[in-house]
Amino acid sequence: MVKIYIDPGHGGMDPGAVANGLQEKNITLQISKELQKILVNEYENVSVKLSRNKDESVSLQKRTDAANHWGADLYVSIHINAGGGTGFESFIYPRVSQRTRTYQKLLHNEILQQVDFTNRGEKQANFHVLRATKMPAILTENGFIDTKLDVERLKNPRFIKKLARGHANGIAKALNLSEKVEKKYSGRGNSLYKVQIGAFANRDNAERLAEYALKLGFNVYIIEE
Ligand SMILES: [Zn+2]
Picture 1 (tube, rainbow, N blue to C red):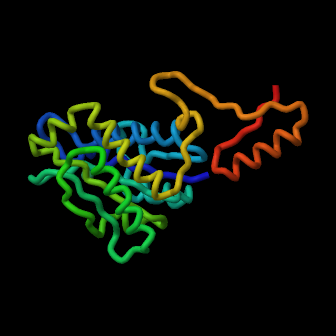
Picture 2 (cartoon, protein in one colour):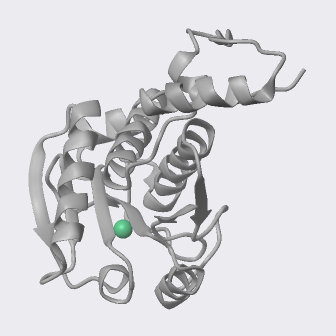
């Protein structure tokens, strides 16, 4: 089971950055919940935990302790920027492993593939959540809450979904997640099209064919009827 820890920045008494009628804590939670949904629904063998599931105060120490205790494979902290500027940037702790650098690059690029944010670059910083985590950790700053151009995007639920999709695609690439069969072969809407390649009276024959299909790279399962 691949364990992914998602950390919606701020919450409760700490709203994070506030401007233009928006609070950072609410946007980070929206993106995180959407991200959790995509990962759980569309990928095999993943377990996802959030540092908070609602609007509540959780200390930074509690967040990193929980991820370390759980033994997460990846920590993704989601934030919205402030202070004047526009676009997207990501952070890792200085002097981390090559693996963490690669993860950052993958997430960074996949997110920018989904949204038309200015690329502010892959950066490093001595943030608590990056420093106190035992697993690769990445922090994303998804636009500026005090910049009109970015705020108009962040107010759009479709844009939030795209941000989540970008994070999910990056995480999937970084951790080599495999898509669920239902997702791979399903059409648009709720239709599900399954492909059957054999039916046998003898289970050995079914297993032989399944093994062959598996070797060819298909996701295979045998159903007894
Ligand atoms: Zn923040």
